[in-house]
Length: 291
Length: 291
Image (cartoon, rainbow over all chains, first blue to last red; front, side, top):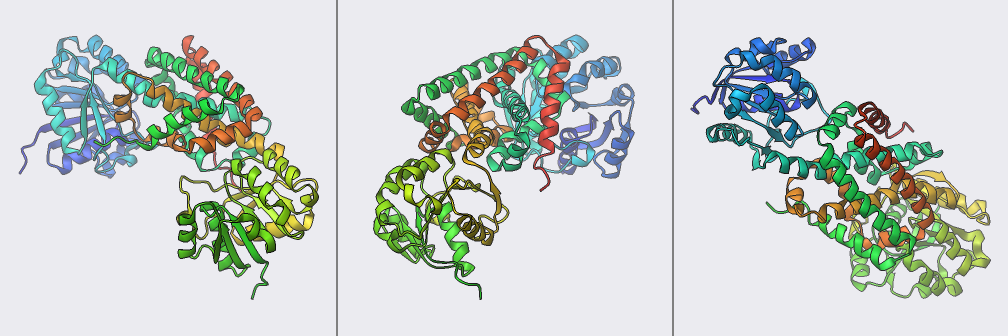
C-alpha cells in the first residue's frame, strides 16, 4: 500500500478545483483526512454528503491548526482576508498551496501574511477551470492529462516542491514550473486577453439595433468564440485587475494586429489579408502542439 | 408517395453543403436525378462512389442544359466565372440558387449574368458550415434544425421561393427570410467579425517571443475562442472583401468597446469592468434564445 503522504488536508473553498484534488488523493490513499472549509453551510453539507470531504468547518483558523497541507481554492480576491485569518494558527510544518489564476499577486500575499514560512508556500495554478462551481462540481480524474503550473518562490523549499509535485502527479497532472512573472505574462495572453475580447465582442453585438436578429442567427462559430464570455463577472474583474499590466500590454498588442487588419481591409489588400489569415490558420491547425 | 419535386438537380461544387442537400432530397424522393459538377475529377469520382450524385461532369454549361434546379455550392469567388459560363445554356424554367456566405455580391452576380431570369434566381445561405470539405463530408440530416436564410430578389417569383422553401423543409431546415442587406449586416456581426478577431488574436500570440510557451499552456478557453481561426484563408479573404463595408463598420464598433475596456482597466475602474463583464456574461448565458 502507498504510504499516506498527507495526514490532514484542509481544502479552503470546496468546489471543482479543491474538491477534485481531494477526491483523487483520497482514492489513491495519499491523504488520511480531508477537511473542507467554506462560508456556505449548504455547500459544506453537500461536500460531506458527496463524501468529497470527511469533515467540514466554517472556521478556517481552527481547521488549519493541525493541517499538513492547506489548499486555498477560493477566488484570489478572498485570499488576503483568508491568509490574514489563518496565519497565526498555521502549524510551522504545514504546506500552503493556492490554485488561483494569477500568481504574482498570490506570491505577494504569501509574503505579506506568511513572511516567516515562505519555505512552505507554493503558488500553483491547475489549468482545469470550467463554468461549474460548488462541491457538486468536484469529480475524480479532473486533472488527468491537464497542466498544473507551479510557481515556487525563491524561498520555497525544494522538498516542498517535490511533495506537492508528487501529489499532483497522483492526480494525473502534467506539471510545468514557471516563475510568477512568466506565468502571469503567459496567462494574460492565452486566457485573460481572450476573455476580455469575448466580453467586448458580446457587448458590441448587444449595442446593435438588430441585436436580437443577430443572436437568433448566430451559429456554431459564434457559440465557440463567445463561450468564455459567459464567465463569472466578478472573478474576471479580479483577474483583470490583478494582472492589469500584462493584460494592458497584450490589449495594446492585439489592437495593433486589429489595426493592421483594418488597414488591409480598407486598402482592399487582398494578398496581405490572405497572408495574415493563412499565418493564423496554419498555427491554429497545428495546435495543440505535440507533447 | 411524395411527388418528385425536382426531376434534375445539378449541384455545382459537391462538398458538405451541396452534397448534403442532394442526399436528403434523394432520400425523401424529392429529386429524380442528381448531377454533380466540379473541377476535381477525384472529388467527382468520390461523390459517385459514395452515391452522393448519380452522374458527374466537369462541364457546367453542358450539365445545366436540362436542369430544373441548379445549386451553386462553390465559394462565392468562383461564382462570377461559373454564372458567366452557364448563363447561355440554362433552360428558361430552371431555378438557380446559391449557398454562399455573403448575399449582396451574389445578388449582383445574378443581375449581371441572368438579368432576364431574375424571377428564377434565389440567393440562399444555409448556416451549416464546418471545417470539412469535399464530397466525403456530405451527410444526411446536416440541415436538421439548422437555419437557412433565403434572400429573394425583388424580382424572384413567389412560387420559386415556395418551391425552394419546400425543399429546405424536407431537409429539416428552419427557414428565415432577410433581404441581402440585412443578411450581410447580420453575418458581418455574428460570423465575419469574430473570424477576423480570432485571426488577429492568433497573430498577436504568434508575434510574442514566448509564443511556444503560450501555445503549450493554452487550454480549453483558448481552444474554443480560436477554433474559427483555423478557417480557410482564401475563403475568409473573399468573404471579408465581399462584405467589406459592413465588416469595417463592425470592426470600428468593436474597437470602441475594446477602448472602453482598456480605459476602465487603465483607470482601475472595478465597478465599470464588473458591469461590462456582467452585461456580456448574462447575454451569453441566455444564448441561444428560445425559438
